[in-house]
Length: 222
Image (tube, rainbow, N blue to C red; front, side, top):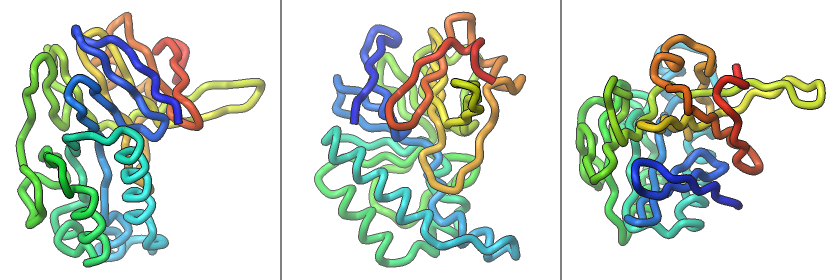
């Protein structure tokens, strides 16, 4: 699996095709919007029954990213659980899986809008993490220089050789990076949405996930 490295606010970051972000200077791996337990939450609220495999699929991808980068620190950038009850209802096998991934490294849970309070899980629970020159938070803020965030699940649509393709993507501008949703069963917000356009500047680039990272000027994706 190739990692696309890029300069950002005086440091170097690496975008993984899976949607994870790696900061080599701090051996730090960052993922956003795992939404663990989404199928359980939908079933609990009387919605469409989905195959209960999304947590295993997400943890498998997370384990692969950890095996690739061997981080000392993992930052989960909010909405790690589809709601607080989904986190509390996490099956023992998945809790044990998480504990194995956490072993021997620092693990930081950033609060999201789906999981705004700490859960009974190992790791440090924080509203945001400041590690100069970067700030890790769930939702982007105006004027957030050096900001790493998630929340919006950005997706880029392009036409390639006559085929319409839509993929989760990173959005990178001079002052911020917005991560794609890492979890299975997560939807996405089009890059053309006014909310995302309002957060990106003229230098913005979309980094499409997939078999490899594909960088495209923000203005050429929808």
